[in-house]
Image (cartoon, rainbow over all chains, first blue to last red; front, side, top):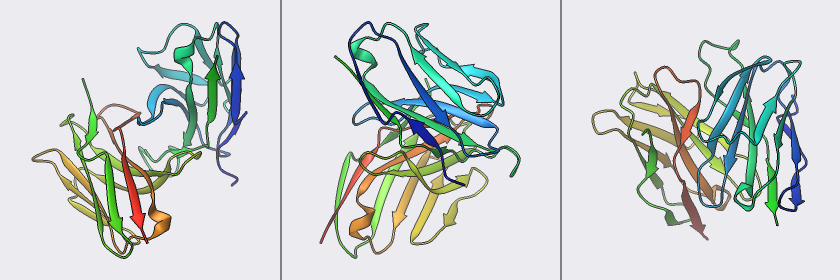
Length: 117
Length: 112
């Protein structure tokens, strides 16, 4: 068990560019979450998957954001036409519903820090 | 809307003292609560959790207390060490939700 892995750790981009982040969850974890965190704030929920199905998206999630988990393992988060307000830490977390019913404990990766210039 | 918030943004304690970090939540239907620790440049790290059918739960050097009457949660750290310096977040899960809602965080500074 190597933990949740995120790539890249840092991304600097110019406004208007598209960026894509990758998350590799803990193996055999069936749930995968994306959160966004700005400085001094707690993580803010964006979306989550159970296996390959995207079950919930935040109402705050702009249509410029899209996430996929095509094979139920790794996930990608893409932001199109980035804006300066997208600058934040993007955190991925995973959990397993097999260990116990309604296992809510999320295991987080170290995040991808996005800076939009 | 649903919110989970903290009373104190920064807490400074002397090494060896006990620390208490407080948290208020607004969703009375929340059935699960969790504390995370986050160090600079890292993702949140699980500390301890508690279900709504419990009032207290203890871990190694940490205790979580839940008061559902006033919708208040606290994290107690015994014999605080310099390595405990970090930002601490509480989070809650709604009765039918599958996501955790986080508060804004409390900075814990441990003075040697």
